[in-house]
Image (cartoon, rainbow, N blue to C red; front, side):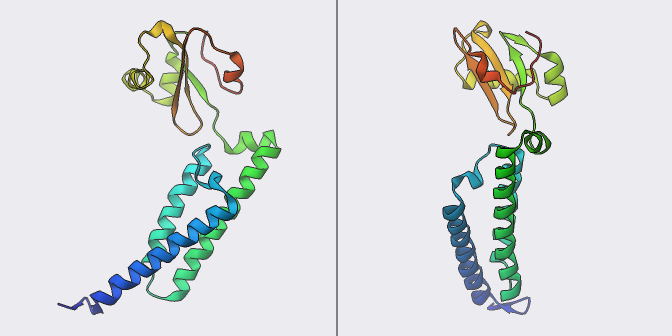
Amino acid sequence: MDMLFGEDLGAAVLRGLVLGAFALMWVVLLVRILGLRSFSKMTNFDFVMTIAMGSLIASASQSENIPPFLQGLAAMVSLFAVQWTAARLRKSSDKVEAAISNTPLVLMRNGEYCEEALKATRVSRNDLVAKLREANVMDFSEVRAVVLETTGDISVLHGDHLNESLLKGVARGPD
């Protein structure tokens, strides 16, 4: 049973363990060099980076030869470099920010649903109410704003008062 599909199973498992561990340590090293911001969920770009990195780690751990493994490691460096460059450009230019980032959108304002925003974003009222419960909202009248963030997360702002600066850069529904 050591031979299945023409390969020694023990060698294949050992190769996967060693290459997977090395690829993971490579990513940890890259994160230490470039910072934790690399895997934040601040933008859709960051989300794609995280998914792509997972795919590259999986591919590298399954490499059968050194050249494809090194190609995977190089691709990881490339993704980190592109993400780092994009973050720098976003920080320095509003035009770049607008081009590569989604705009957050108000889904609920002052206890009232923003129907057009819900329809445009395909967020159901039931999903929105679930987020209100997660935020411990006891009554719709407590809700100052619910925002669909650039990452797809939903933020619930509730209480007696809302500082309007918290909605700077957020596309607004009707007040």
